[in-house]
Amino acid sequence: MEANRVYNFNPGPATLPLEVLKETQAELLNFSGSGMSIMEISHRSKEYDAVHNKAKADIKELMGLGDDYDVLFIQGGASLQFAMVPMNFAINGKKGNYVLSGSFASKAYKEAEIQGVGTVAASSKENDFRNVPKQGDLKIDPNAAYLHICYNNTIYGTEYHYIPDTNGIPLIADMSSDMLSRPLDFNKFSFIYAGAQKNLGPAGVTIVVARKSFIENSPENLPTMLRYNTYSKKNSLYNTPPAFCIYMVGKVAAWLKKQGGLSVLAERNAKKAALLYDAIDNSNGFYKGHAEKDSRSFMNVTFRLPTEELEAKFIAEAKEHKLCGVKGHRSVGGLRASIYNAMPYEGVKCLTDFMEQFRTANK
Ligand SMILES: *Cc1c(COP(=O)(O)O)cnc(C)c1O
Image 1 (cartoon, rainbow, N blue to C red):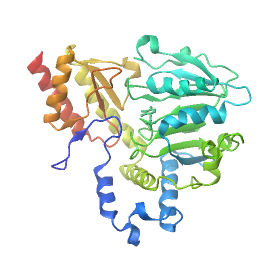
Image 2 (image 1 turned 180 degrees about the vertical axis):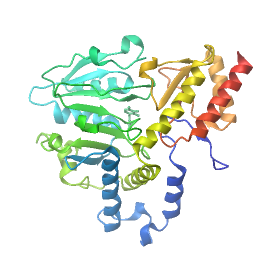
Image 3 (image 1 turned 180 degrees about the horizontal axis):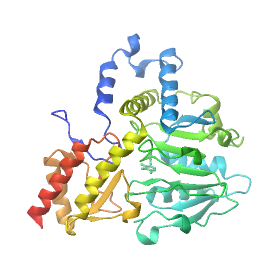
Image 4 (image 1 turned 135 degrees about the horizontal axis):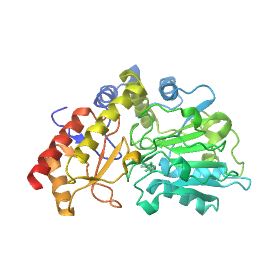
């Protein structure tokens, strides 16, 4: 670790690979021999075009997707996708069907409800969102325009360990906090979206990966910027894109390829998660995980201490050990360690060493 850096467990914006930050720094004043930074170059220039298209190609390559899929860059965060998805797809009397597995899943559903097109296929709210509904719990509307799921629930620390079988209904997933963290059969999804600031880059761009045939016909009555086919037809260059964000997402994608791709990342992420969950499970009840074991997230590990006083003390002392951003979301309380792709194993090891030390001193 760099001397003046910390281990950053923030949920998003979140830690980025050090190599990516250094490369960005080195290129900042003179990108690709242009004598300008990437932020000062025209989005119609050939230098930017190369960055834009390479980022798209690398994301598709990492996900193992072919020509029938497109990658779009959109602004407005994952939250704008909550509204755009029903606007574009829940049309002609068809509704959007939602699985409620946490805060963001519920927010997505709320946007469909505002438009009068949301229905619920399953919910784990009664269980404080400690689990992701199982296949057998899903009551999928056979006439739905799509089934919407949130693949990793950032706040509650749960994640799908299966891809729902929808019986032919297009599957849409919010993967804001676990996109590119492990290989999946992405061909089973019609539409995937992710705000970049969790696992992919800086805030300011949302990545959409969608089956081309699913997004080619957007309703004509929607404003231009809210229609997916505006982005697909114009290669996400209808208007000025968030060029610097896309440039950094491209660097992260190239870094992931250099590490060996998603299967290597998945192995590393599973090791980090196991270390942390073992520290919780082997603490004689001092640390209590929020998520049920079979729904545990590889990305966001949520847990509680015996009292809120101890939790506050833990957060303060962790900071002294250069372990930052471990406070849980206000709606769940407790602690949360976000251990995305860019968090090294050593960072998680420092955290679990500290946890053991803290437990011994305070049990
Ligand atoms: C953070 C997050 C969001 C919200 O993203 P914004 O880009 O802030 O709108 C949505 N879904 C999930 C799963 C998230 O983690």
